[in-house]
Amino acid sequence: MADASKVIHVRNVGHEISENDLLQLFQPFGVITKLVMLRAKNQALLQMQDVPSAINAMQFYTNVQPTIRGRNVYVQFSSHQELTTMDQNAQGRGDEPNRILLVTIHHMLYPITVEVLHQVFSPHGFVEKIVTFQKSAGFQALIQYQGHQNAISARTSLQGRNIYDGCCQLDIQFSNLDELQVHYNNDRSRDFTNPNLPTEQKGRSSQHPGYGDAGVGFPQVGIARFMV
Image 1: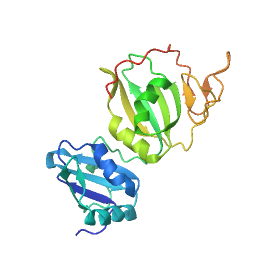
Image 2: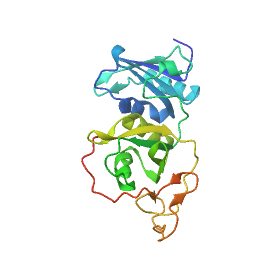
Image 3: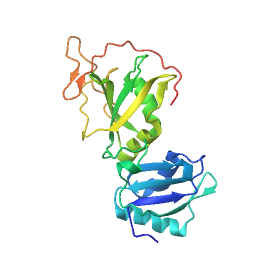
């Protein structure tokens, strides 16, 4: 057996097995920081936050055969001690996992409100706060989950997907912020842990310090057919 490593090598990963399936198999043992699907080889490389987390997972699956969608998968320590940029595909860029996601929306042909973003991201865990704003990169949003693993799962599943058919593509990174500050509950910002916040006062600046101009000026529209 290879020396203990925080990188776990998974074999017999069929095409019916998704990234989320692997996340669910290993997330009870700790935070998963990177995931690489080697589809051509029916394998995957998965990096835990630290070596003890990986050891716990390996010890458990030494006594219990891991099975995903009726298929036995086989795990061992990888010869890699760390997944580098060269090892990774689009699922992992090597940035530090955080419970806050920075989302940039490309090809935005339809308005995107807090309600739209909440509907897209809430299936992956409890969304605590959302702040949207306009910057030079385009329309962006900060989305704060209750836990790191929720954010990792959302990024793995939604990165590169379209909100609407053929447009509103999601580009998701981990933010370096520790906590979002939300002052108003409206179409541009929302604190789901504090429903008693006021809506924005008329004539008051809509800027959120440190985030950018949240006054995008789009009318609220109904939710169209989501592609995510």
